[in-house]
Image (cartoon, rainbow, N blue to C red):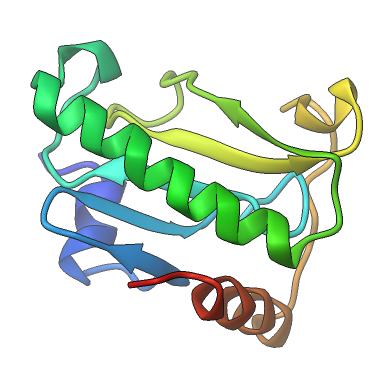
Length: 132
C-alpha cells in the first residue's frame, strides 16, 4: 500500500508543493512546528533513508540544501534545523524547520495552525527564492 507521501507525490492527496525534480519532492508540513516547516522526500518509496541508492541519497540531501537556503531567506530564524526521524510515516523524509533555539525542533510542542492563505503565502515566498 502506498504511503501518504507517495499519494501526495502522485497528486492523489493535495499539498503545498515547494519543488520537485526527477527523484525528490518538497512540500510544506501541514502540522508545522514553525512557519515554513518543509518536508523533503524521495519519490521512491523507501522506509529507511539509509536504504536509498547512494545517488538518490546524495541528490535528496542536495535538494534539501537548496530548499533550506531558500527557506532561510524567507523566514526570520537563526538556522534551518534538520530532522530525520522516520517513525510516523513509512517513507523516508527530511524535516527542514526554521529555528531560533534548540527547543524549536521539539516534536512534542504544539503545532502551528495556519490558514490556507498563510500556507500559500509562505509557499509562494519560498518558491520565489528557488532557481528551479
